[in-house]
Length: 346
Image (cartoon, rainbow, N blue to C red; front, side, top):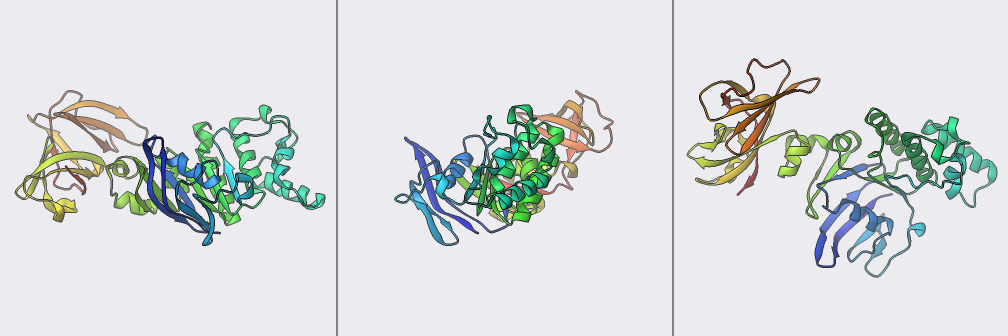
């Protein structure tokens, strides 16, 4: 089943939280919403779940009206599953009892069969008789997912589902969740603050900034063609530079960049001040007497990150091998091979 948000606008007192949001999630599709804190991600999820009333706009399920400013069915009357960060399992019920809670009006034999299949799908069969407080955070989250999925909801909503799980377990949980959501052919909307999680889980990523949907696309589309500085910095791995257009070049604190290397250069005019994003792996450096200097060098396992200070801005360059330069050394940046994208004209 498809869920559609049409012209959703929401305010808390005098503060605008969501501004004209239009988003559609098809059956079997996983969409992740990502954005800075306070951008309206969880509010949109709560509106879909029925925990907040629609103020302006409407929500449709398969082109049939689910909710608007006048129609507000309670959460339990919506074919929507909801999983929060803190699991919200019943402490006085066993894992099996938690999972089977929503299976009303189902014959006992079929009910037990569904519970068994659900527990097996998320690999928690061995804790079926235990209580939530005896489980690890990862086990609790698996049980919460099974409980939400077992009723076969038309739509699944997940709010920061893996935020409280240890890093080593998070990747496996993501894979298990995606596999099960795809198997159930469920339209899924996931709120996350983790760029890696969004790129790993989503068929499409929707980016909210200050209540506005600034871009929606596949992870590949957002990686190669970011349309907002937030996307460039968090999802695309770009470093941002600011400079001024002078003739055929953009002059920055780190050196000059030919306009011919900037995607979107047709929008630039002489003396414009612009913000661009560049691929750090496409930039090289060498010792020089320029104002730029190496502020720090760090090892991140698969790469070395060199922090270059230039006036008020810092640039992070990535190297597979340990660089020969040292902290404090003045350097010159070679931007001749840079891949750049225009992000903003100031």
